[in-house]
Image 1 (tube, rainbow, N blue to C red):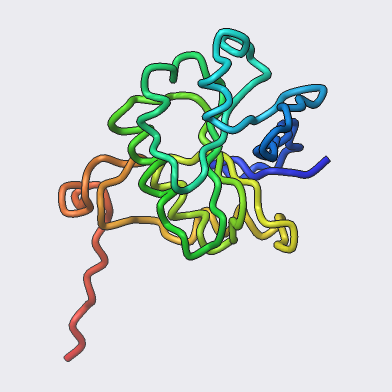
Image 2 (image 1 turned 135 degrees about the vertical axis):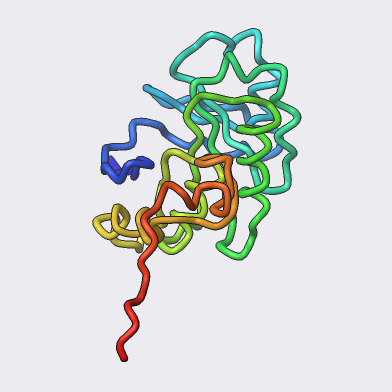
Length: 177
């Protein structure tokens, strides 16, 4: 079973199976145990899936998170697929789900997820990450802590640094004559 990284840096086993979009004419095959199914299929059959704590959804990068806004309280987990590391639309989707639509469940990054993206994903509201299989998951906790302070407001802190600067000690260089 693969592992995932949580936003606090802990590494745990991933119990969720990502179910791919079935080919045209094929039906959805659910595995045993928790499953992440394509969002459009969940919406199409929501009367069968609503309230099931072992069924979550995944959004592809081109899908708008608004399609889920009326059903967020019924989804234990939403995963956002990053088809390639250069596709940043998933960051916007995460912020919309957290800030505009108020989603409070687990938000997971899947797909082409790299170590150097984790800190930025965390700031956008993700709280778990399924790294690309060729990446060393043991380096992930350190990658989530690269920066101690960020200048901008985000989902992890809604105040910019200039408003928080009184919270941090300021190092003053001593003059040497």
